[in-house]
Image 1 (cartoon, rainbow, N blue to C red):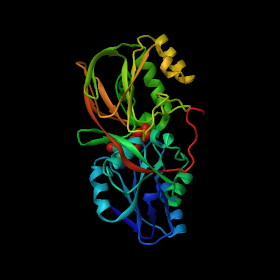
Image 2 (image 1 turned 180 degrees about the vertical axis):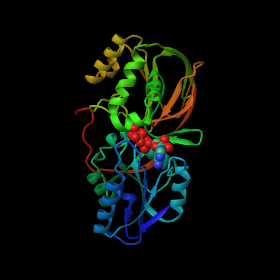
Image 3 (image 1 turned 30 degrees about the vertical axis):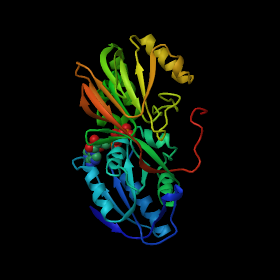
Image 4 (image 1 turned 45 degrees about the vertical axis):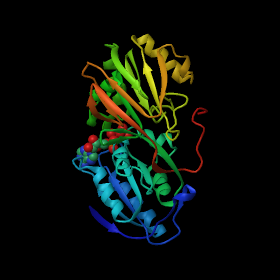
Length: 326
Ligand SMILES: Nc1ncnc2c1ncn2[C@@H]1O[C@H](COP(=O)(O)OP(=O)(O)OP(=O)(O)O)[C@@H](O)[C@H]1O
């Protein structure tokens, strides 16, 4: 851990906002230097500039990819940090959030990953300087729901089927150089051989068998492009997780699915079923399909999710745009 400087931050989570006007607190930043769009030096410099300007102290930990981030976050909580910030993509954010489960310490996000889905969902600025300003100047606290898989916490999406296979095909290097286009290329390669699989799906202890191209389990509506959303009702802090079952079998079906998404007519799509869960979701299949959680491959062929409502406090802008209107 690199110690850089100390200072003051004041948090008032009871009012669901935070401000920087009292002494005695510090900020701890976890920075993923290889996240999609991350320019580590720029993040370090801007944070230094804003913290010094507001008299705030901070420490920075740069990830190596080999550490257990939730443990590092739990250690940081014992050192009286008032804000934990994550500069990275959704993978870094969810690993940091894992360490903050049920904590009163809020999580701030500097979105420098490839997709940055949670940041988009919460209207956190994607521009580094504005994001650093939000970390330092503060905003409102949104307590978002979490999905627990074993000892891991996921906050955006869990998918299994053709969608997770697309992600598995997309290499880290391709993501860094081609950003979202890397996924488009992998998607074309996957969809040329479209198919469906049989899944056992259990939602809130009710079991069913389904055929689907993929199942998207979404706490966050953002798909990552052009404000498209997985479902009209997906909200990260409503105590529910949405299950989007995509049954497209041909390229034409996929185009129809996308058309309904584009025109925000999710429920009219003949190739999609929407379900909601409040307690738990279990998916299993005999096929060796990758399970993708918050941008990382987290397992294969089955996933068992416990839903934890309002589990993680996150600093977001006070004004939130209407997502379905954009
Ligand atoms: N120094 C490092 N070297 C190599 N890999 C790293 C390093 N630090 C973190 N990682 C890896 O980075 C991954 C997390 O990346 P992250 O999700 O933050 O960015 P991203 O994948 O570009 O963005 P997004 O998830 O939003 O698409 C993890 O697999 C982690 O192990």
